[in-house]
Length: 222
Ligand SMILES: Nc1ncnc2c1ncn2[C@@H]1O[C@H](COP(=O)(O)OP(=O)(O)OP(=O)(O)O)[C@@H](O)[C@H]1O
Ligand SMILES: [Mg+2]
Image 1 (cartoon, rainbow, N blue to C red):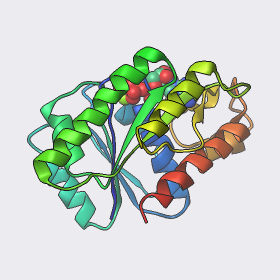
Image 2: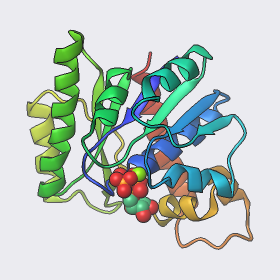
Image 3: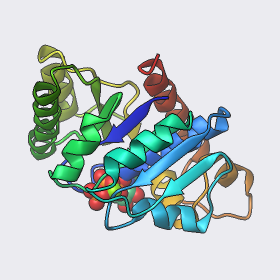
Image 4: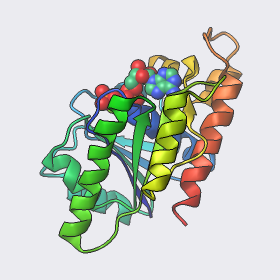
């Protein structure tokens, strides 16, 4: 089964958010998902400790020495494996990338983010060279505006296209519901159904966006 790795040496670009959205959407489609939290800051472990949807298993504290074994074991169990990494470039990150069927590089549409994000793409290329095979990878733009496409975003999209880099559409719009997921745990569907939960955002729009994103990722796994 596929191994999907979230990678970017830039902190705070949305790796853990992408990991949660993919895990919860795949679980909603009745897939069995194993999430590996390889970040010492434990974002995913904290999310799961509040509430974890059925169909998702979380493995915490996966370090450099266990990563390859842990991915192989989870992959062998026939599950979709989603790996969340710390926002650094490290041997752990390289090892995870070497095991990936798809590397997702979240990038914010700012000039600085694009620069550091392209270091993530360079890491993928290094692993491809070391392994002598291609590793499928794609960029997703995160925290984009729901209202307008900024000039920086348009320029970045053009640049990625000219470099032949796969860009996942739709981008992940900046939505309060995405960050609230970490406060409540669980998934957007339960957030939408729980009327007592006060949220500062349009959960239905967030859910629609997350579905589109998960479907676009799923298409790349076929
Ligand atoms: N599309 C979005 N809309 C609103 N908030 C978002 C979105 N994506 C991420 N965030 C918020 O931005 C912050 C950073 O996101 P996240 O933790 O997913 O990034 P990260 O790349 O995993 O960071 P780190 O490198 O520290 O692990 C979080 O507070 C998260 O809730
Ligand atoms: Mg994170």
